[in-house]
Amino acid sequence: MRSFSVTAKGGVEKCRIVCRARALSKLKEAVGGRRTFVFTDENVLHLYGRAIKRALPGAFVYAMKAGENFKNPQTLFELLQKMAEAKLNRASVLVAVGGGVVGDIGGLAASLYMRGIACIQVPTTLLAQVDSSVGGKTAVDFCGVKNLVGAFHQPELVLIDPAFLRTLPPRELRCGLGEIVKHGALDGAIFDRLAAQENLFDLKFLAEIVPENIAYKLSVVRRDPHETGLRKCLNLGHTMGHALELADGTLSHGEYVLLGILYEARLARAHAHCDGEYLEALEALCRRVLVCDPAAFDVEKAAEAALLDKKNTSAGTVVVAAPAKKGEYVLIELPYAEYARELARIRRELC
Ligand SMILES: NC(=O)c1ccc[n+]([C@@H]2O[C@H](COP(=O)([O-])OP(=O)(O)OC[C@H]3O[C@@H](n4cnc5c(N)ncnc54)[C@H](O)[C@@H]3O)[C@@H](O)[C@H]2O)c1
Ligand SMILES: [Zn+2]
Image (cartoon, rainbow, N blue to C red; front, side):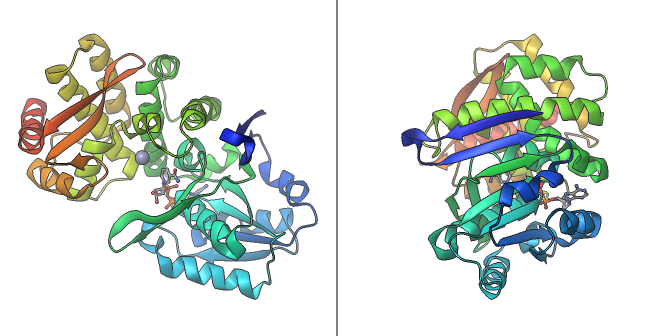
């Protein structure tokens, strides 16, 4: 078992993150005598509904339809309505059991209901365990923009159990590995662990590496709880990855992050002071997870999509947090036209 605690500046928000086996059996003790509402999705309910009901007999359970398509205000308000019907009060607790979609909507509902009630996160995907459940960001998509409406709301507890990964399809494991490799590109010790591991999909290995990834993400979040500066390093791989994701959309988010890391590593080689040998090893790591051809994408469409990505684009330039040396990243700012040319050049290089 490993446990972390997060206290934001001023000591106001507190969150405990516990990685342990049989996490569900700890839920009853965690919620105590409080009125409890479990929010999940239909897939997770199908797989773990009985275990959830056994762990929290008497709790209200509500499942949304699974997937990003349902991460919208309608689902949020349906959840809030169910919470009101269950007569939750200020002292109640919402337990979100699921992937990042459930965690983001559940966390946002908890932050809104009666101006904020307690929330416990039980992340069941690899991505949610190493990334979305840590840091207190919550949101829904709105007006066609991802995560446009949201809030910062730290859960009081995040319970992480590697056993959930046993039922995850390979695509979802690749998705989580995208963020893990990103952490590896920012942290030398994680990179070494990944590079030395033969089978990156081995569940025993993943169970070991999840707490290390949480520790890394927390070290960043602690220094920048409301994403004003440093936390932007977590955007590594996401500028080019997100552009490819908007243009293509057939792979999981983490796979686009891996493609983004691969493209951005090549960008760094052309534009920044970097370690070529290391970047080759990083690219090899990305390729060990990916099952697609990195050259098989419409990069012109991706460049157009990048223009709409307000997070990374300002005043006609695109800012990329790219890998440079082991444990180091570099910010590369390019005029939009050059950025588009670079995407096309890198794709040609990959052919
Ligand atoms: N808040 C943050 O800081 C943050 C960070 C990164 C990503 N996110 C968000 O996270 C979301 C993506 O999360 P995700 O990748 O977990 O997607 P997801 O929640 O849609 O889960 C992926 C799929 O796996 C299924 N699933 C969940 N647990 C399972 C299990 N144990 N076994 C089998 N199937 C299971 C789900 O039903 C779903 O079909 C995005 O909306 C993204 O914006 C948020
Ligand atoms: Zn991501």
